[in-house]
Image (spheres, rainbow, N blue to C red):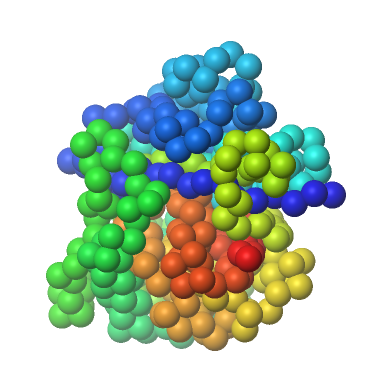
Length: 394
């Protein structure tokens, strides 16, 4: 078995996931093609690419028809570069990278471009009308509650207060604002469609303002989701709805790509290996609490890499609501200086299929900034899925 390395990383800015967003005028393909071009400008030879693996959660309409293959053709990469799109819900982007790394380690391929894309403003979540969202019997049998209700269930079970959740969201916003002031994303960011910043960051957020916001998911809970979530468990007696729009990840448009390859391929391309993919893991857990899957996947990946949490310099965890982040911070015993040190999806937006790739890319760049050795990334996804990945530098 060989080793797989991250050789490069690029991303778009994250635009607001609505018709008012800075990327709404662009399709998912419009987001991807400039990133493919940017990789070429930075030294990648398309003829050396064995495959392109992309994550995308809503593969319908403009996001259907194998975006990976279509994008390479539109980017003038020739007709010999294959492409495939995977769907692990919110973990699609990180899963694409894990799959690419596994194939490189196996020796089957030398170079894979992997990542993800989502235009939530043009193809909203649940646009695929999947049975998991729309078939009443499937919903009942799987316990497929809304993610926000699941987050409130986690907060209730773990005893996180409204003030705890608001505090975490405020921290994420302030860290993201500080990272942008420090030009922390200059190396990876490719301006596309006139947008060169993550437009959802709110540097003026305050605890007083956050405290005025109403619970976001109480209505859904009263409409049957609470009863469904509690149907198969003895506790809690009721769900306390504590998450608001500020403590939830706001939808975004965006794309991100990494180049995964072995050492020999890096030499041929003139690229320097930036970090080794030490291990990865995919898990499935309770589909009702669901948002704990990412943490469990990180734990499995760390065990596979024989790395303890104490050895980890940076933890990047997709902020699928504040409660799972507080749970991970408690269980991993990591403070804000190690957990999402440049802010996360609560502050900068959740471009569903791209989020996992942005999390891994952010981990890579943060390890480099602090000259760290080990980092771990994780994403929780619908139906109890989770993906984790460990990087090693040096």
